[in-house]
Amino acid sequence: MSNKNKKKLTLTQQEYQDFAKAREPKRPALINCVKAFFLGGLICTIGQGLQLFFMTYFNFTETTAGNPATAVLIMVSVLLTGLGVFDHIAQWGGAGITIPVTGFANTIASAAIEHRSEGYVLGVGGNMFKIAGPVIAFGVFSAFVVAIIKIIIKSLGGM
Image (cartoon, helix red, strand yellow):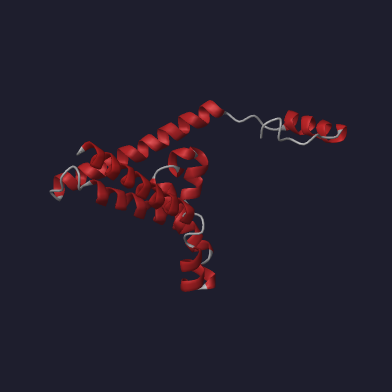
């Protein structure tokens, strides 16, 4: 929040803010960035290896091999979420594992697992996209807007 939007604190509140800030543990930002970079790079390397595997053994092209490689990464992250391993990896690697498609699959799977006791339709189906739903909606809307802009630019260039 900017300083203009902050309400005036009383002397006691300000003293408490200073007290809490002095005792807040320092976060090792550089180490966390290195861990995230390493883990994100490892996931990308695994994805590239999967893509080469599909190109070599199943005669996919470079373009079409990305889809099954992504599907394998999604299935592995859902499996690791179900086994409770994904959270430990994410705790260590931070954004390195949560930013790619693996993190998206984790949010859907963890919400589904959390609500499975309520039943498959109302529990799993109704709550599975609670966290990921806005991301999907924003992605679809953004793709629509970009497609409209591309069509307009192409039509203006063709005149």
